[in-house]
Image 1 (cartoon, rainbow, N blue to C red):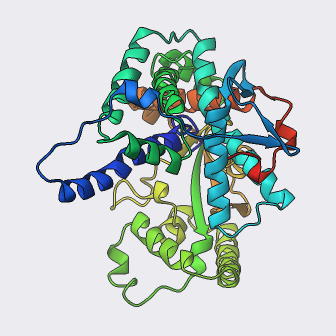
Image 2: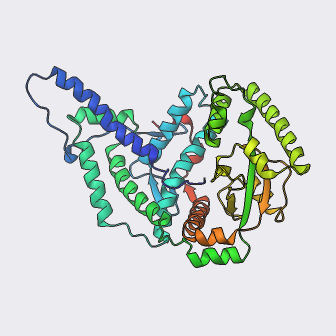
Image 3: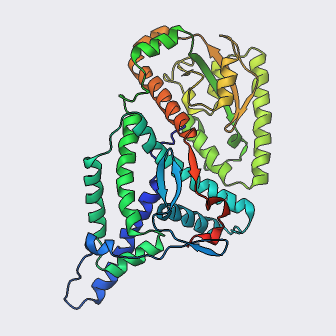
Length: 404
């Protein structure tokens, strides 16, 4: 699936959660050392007075970061302290992975990672603004409540400051985060709902069917993973397993392989796929071949006594399948079968079937919903792909240690 929405502020959410987690540990220690007196929890006023040292150094010169805007995203300002959080978190991650932060490629990878997180977060908020979402008192009040609850979980100013430093955050950034996350959630939920400006109606769906936008396919998948060797334990009661269970066992075995072993498994899978394709070309029953070789759970039988009881996939050219599969499906005429179509999953043999109007009419509501969601996500992701970001004059001169 192509769901990028509702992912942008996850890392921040985890970090803010870790602030409280940090204090839980210190609280336990202080409880064990306490001599009958209770600690005074931190108030928002005390938290606001906490100063965390932050710095930006460019060409050996310290830059004043007070009110510094590092970039704008569709006109929304990203303050230095928030940019700093993403930057330092990414640097930590790459450093722990053993990468050289002075390497030009690593530095560019850090910039790309930071940019993507910022675009995902602010892009969703921007999309909400453009399509009529109003951020107001409700979001401010919810953000304030969440912030106050978090701060009051700390038993001392020192423990809160230690947590902020450990997570590369400042109190102001945390406050802004809570408000941004409330706006983000409102925008994301609005854009993805049934009342989304991108949503499709039943009439839209039926018109798309009439206009020939839909293609119905059967998919016989020989995944790369089926070239992995299964243990005797994995093979127990094999015929009683569902397609999904068989696929999972192959995936588990494949994921344990080295890169060279995976290449060998892929070659073995390709050989099997070629053999199956020859059987298709020889006129063997496609449904029987699916029952014997396919490892796509979506092609499982809906009636175990009826080998032809596979609905298949109803897709459009904008459907959330890999592009190679979509291209391969729409290149076929009804009744035709493809050669091998390779995707990131493995090797597909696709058979295009006529649309089943009885099935469509019986399932029009669920199919409309799925059709609508496909277009909602496509429209949202298209919007996010075109969000405009503009950096300040310091960005191009950044090095890994420029921000501290």
